[in-house]
Image (cartoon, rainbow, N blue to C red; front, side, top):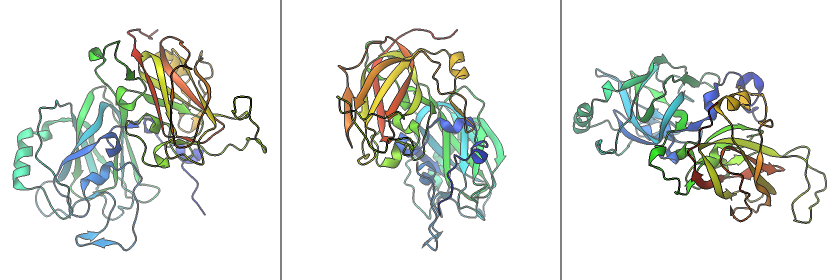
Length: 397
C-alpha cells in the first residue's frame, strides 16, 4: 500500500512557504558543481539531481556502499569538506533544503553556506567528478587563491538531522535580498547529504532588455514564479517555467483525475469537452509586459493531456498579491478569483505530446503582471511559454 503523499495537512503545515519557489540549483536548470574537496563514496554532482534520492539495498561499489548523494570519506586530516555550486539561475534565495535521505549513520552533522555574486571572468580549476578521489594539491591551491572561505555567510553553522523518513528534510530560511550566482556548501566535518535545494526567484538585469525584444515573460530564468494552484498531485506547476523541454511526465504539471468529471463525456460544436471541473495555476511574470504569443507543450503527456486550456491575465500590485496568495502551509486561502482577470487565450483544444502555439487567437488586454492557466478538466502540461514585450510601468500602490 502506498504512503499518503505530503499533501496531508498534518505534514504540509510544517513545510515553509519558500518550497513553492523555483530550485535555482538543480542540474536541469543549469546548476553545476565546480569543486569538491572529496568525492569518495558519492560525487557532489548528486546534490543537484532534480529527482528525489533513492536507496539501493545491498549495492556496493569498490569504494563502499552506493549512495545517492554527496558522501565524503571519514576525515582523518585537519579541516572539513566543502564544495562550490554554481547556480543554474542566479537570483535571490529565500530558502535552503538539505535532504539527508538514507544517510542515517553517515549524515553530515552540521553545515553552513556562503554565497557570492561573480562575473564570468572568475575561473575555477577543471573538475571531473569521480568516486574514490579527493581534490588534488593543484586544485586546492587554485581554490585558495579564489578565497571562497571569505564569501558572505548566508546560512550560519546549522545542525542537520539523520536521513530517516521523518527527519531527512532540513529547511533553512535565508534572510537576504542580494543576488547570488555561486554558493559554498560547508559540511562539518564530513559525511553525506543527499540533495541540496536552493529555493528562490531569478533576478535578471531588466535595464539591458529592450521594450522591442520578444522575451518569455514567465520563464523561470526571467523571474517568473508560480504563486498558487488547485492541484499538483503528480507534478508541480512550477515545472512549467523551466527552460529545457521536459524529459518525462514527472518534469511537468500533472493533476489527479477530477472526481466530478461526467460519467459520459460530450463535446460542443468546437470539439471541446463539456465539463464543469477545471484545474488552475497562477504565475507572476518576471516583468510586467504585453503577451503576444503563448506556447502550451504537452510533451510526454499522451494518455493524460488536458482536453483544453485557457490563459487569463491581470495587473496585481504587491499588496494585492499578498492578500490573495493562494497556497501557504497546505491551506487554500483563496484562488485569486478576486482578481480582475481578462481572457488572453480563450478555451482552446489541446492534443497529446505536442507543442501548441497560439498567436492569432490571443486577445490584446494590454500589460499584465500575473497570468492564470486553466486546464479542463484535468491532466498534464509540460511547459508554458508566454512571449511578449516588457513595459516600464510600476504596479506599486
